[in-house]
Amino acid sequence: MNMNLRVAPSLLSADFARLGDEIARAALAGADYIHVDVMDGHFVPNITIGPPVVRCLRRATNLPLDVHLMIDRPDIYAPQFADAGANFITIHVESPSLDSSHKISSLLTTIRSLGVKPGIVLKPRTPADAAFPYLDLCDMVLVMTVEPGFGGQAFMHNMLPKIAALRAEAQRRNLALDIEVDGGIDLSTAQLCCAHGANVFVAGTFLFGQSDQEMAARIAALHNLSP
Ligand code: DX5
Ligand code: ZN
Image (cartoon, rainbow, N blue to C red):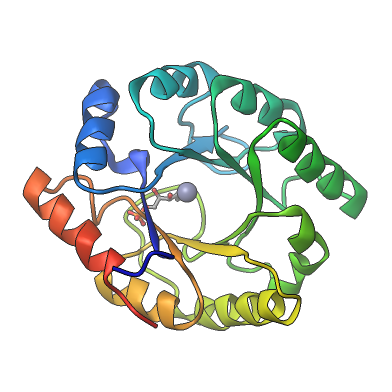
């Protein structure tokens, strides 16, 4: 197993009536993080969960909670998710309230000051260099490999050069940056992402909806990838 690779099952594909059980079985299956997709019906055309639910998830697991904010006002809500127990909070550079580089830097700094690992997320049409000014302020960059909003979409292969560009820039600057991919991840697309420099794999459909045994086998296979 490559110690640097992490698997983050996305709760978006879990049974929302049984979130505690779903997290417990992901943990038993070998998950490293639990990926929590927060959508506000404005930034993306779907609505999911807010800080009260994250607070309950926090009591249900010791696994790090990786909170992906797909919302118009991450500046208002990121501190609330930090207080609710998030371990990672990733914010989209495209969020309308983050309309200056100063606002993005300042929110990343705020998140870090709250003891949470901050990250930047890039939608498919946003180029790699949109994240470059913030890499020192981030623990992670999340490259969306589908348009955010829904699970079960097809992986966009044209995101691979973006992953490679981010990894090259991180190496050039000697940064131990996590590069996370999200959307359409299965074993074969994760292998491609890994070969291009990604090391954290979010997967919804590929992991939830499987038996406990199959989920564990799939997480193990992801952990065993090598570039
Ligand atoms: C999509 C979310 C993803 C989603 C991925 O906007 O960010 O985390 O759950 O689902 P799959 O793995 O099914 O593409
Ligand atoms: Zn996500």
